[in-house]
Length: 206
Image (cartoon, rainbow, N blue to C red; front, side, top):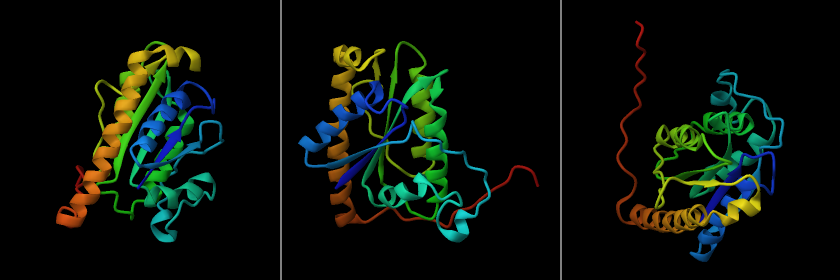
């Protein structure tokens, strides 16, 4: 069992990484393997909606998105972390996950566990948190919660470490995620995945 943690901050060892690393340690302590990947410092272009990925089974822009996609498909859970930029995630990580989720459309993500982690000096956390969670809810992915919203506060990694509640939230998140992943693995063996109907696409303008 393994979890992919995506660091959307341009600062590879900054506040967002500090939070993600605390989640990863809790996952490791509970028998879940982890990998943290850094994308916030990369020049990742956005999705252009060409739908070529439906034909070639990968994004038409052959960059780090396609390198990560096989790991994303195989993982049991994913954590997306981002700093707050004008009450939204970093634009680079949005471009990355837009293309990652869209280009892996044919991959059944049902019961792949997801969580969002947000860091900020002060404000904008809940709006950023809400936006990241929408990637999971559109994909049939259960969202992992903690004892409070998954966010930390601080302007430096040292300040984040002093956010005792925030760091505790990260540890609780990691433990909850490990429990949910293990429970889903057992549930799949015993009951299988939920029955699926053929997907219907309904346009509002006819």
